[in-house]
Image: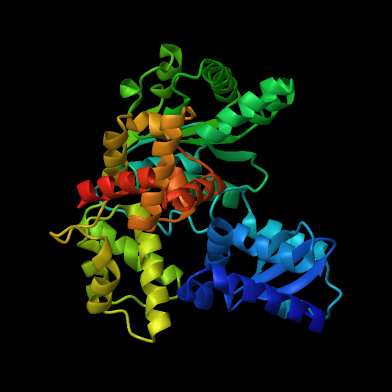
Length: 443
């Protein structure tokens, strides 16, 4: 935290300010501090774990680009909460301390700290899934194995699954826990086969106490992946380990999945989560606002909940409202809500739902939703997929991570590339006509 470090961070923030909205800059970036920059590692302090998570998920590449430009190096970024400042007494604290802090904060790889049972709003739509998940977390490998959770996009499957991981870790940090999407599982299997390291890959997956795989439906049609999953499944269950899976449909409705694997999926407890009702959406908003350190009036929460939005979109939408409120210096009122959401509604006042965008894109290009969410890279599918990414960003303003999750569990960098690709083609007549045609159908 010396003069040189301060000047470097001023330069970085100046670069970032050009690339992000003013509201995001004031809320997310301005309160940050560069604690140290040593051996290519930049240690950045932010006000809260929530802000750190947003910076990691949505703006890591933006920050890295600015740091790389200002330092001329390939920089690695480590985030810590500002409470660390009270611990640091001199300027000799290096990256090792920062890495230790980061490890302590992150806890589990790819599992969000705030996704806990305590932070989950529960109503009749998800109560059975909640009770089942808490039971599994208390008795891993002994009850409901596997636990198979299904439901549409944005109903809270990922929150519930990561809450299991966090609860198990809290009760016993020595437990070996792995959370990943089916696409990541697929990539690891394919890469292991390509590089002839299947032995180490098998050891990684089969030596666990808790394996959680999100969006398992995307293993459909992948024979080698299904074979590896089948054997991993059997070994883990035989060893007393717990398996938790999620999908957008129950096992019996999954196509192109081996019957022996479907039998394993159905061998424990299968529970569904229905879309959140008005009361649950209101509760979700109040909980998320509290996480942001924001007192949300219940009437305002009800106003937002009246809109046709799924649970996943609520957090991003709430953050936009809060940043807009801070930027304007105005209280968050129902009038402000109408102003912010006005450009993204149908004429009847209903919010545009992400699923609606994906369906319209697929109808326009004559492809299936499962194909757009799948892994095939045919030219027509890539175009439809990237247009869907662009419209989900432009029309609903989802984060890159949210879009990635909706479109088959893709990494946020893949979505960033897809959105950027379409933005670069907007001046071309064909793509602009495509976008116009799809958005007209939406409205």
